[in-house]
Length: 170
Image (cartoon, rainbow, N blue to C red; front, side):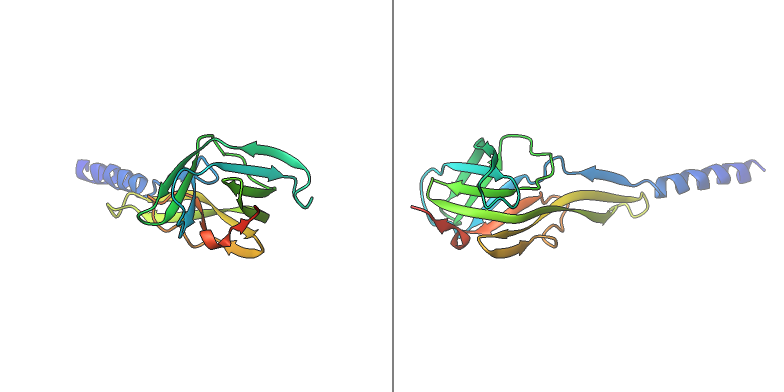
C-alpha cells in the first residue's frame, strides 16, 4: 500500500516536471543592426530617424543617436548596437543614416512576434519557448523579411542589411 502511494506521488511529480515550460521574451525589439559587406574603414556616425508612417518622411517623431558601433574591417561588417532600451513596438517609417551620407529608408515597417520552441535537453522537463521579433519592411524599395532567420536560442533579434542597399545622399 505504501509502495502504491509513493508511486502515485512519484508519477504526480513526474507529470508536473514534464509539463513545465520556460517562457523567455526578448526585451528589445531588435538588439543590433548588422551591415554586411561593409568596406569603409574608420569610425562611423549613426542616427536613426523615426517618422510618422505614410507621411513621405515629412513628420519627424524622434531621433536616436546613442549607438555602440563596431567597424570590423577584417570580416567587412558594421555592427550597430543601441545603447537605449527599444522595447516599444515600432510602427513608423525610419531612416538609418550613416556618416551623414548613406541612408537606408524603411517603409511598411512591422516587427512580427515569432515564437521559437526548443526541446529541453534533458528530454522530459518541458520546452523552452522564446518569443522574438522579426523585421518585415521595405528598405530603399527592396522587400526584406527576417521571419526565418532566428533558429538558435543564442541568436538575438536583429536587423541585417547589405551595404549595397544603402543610398548615397552626398
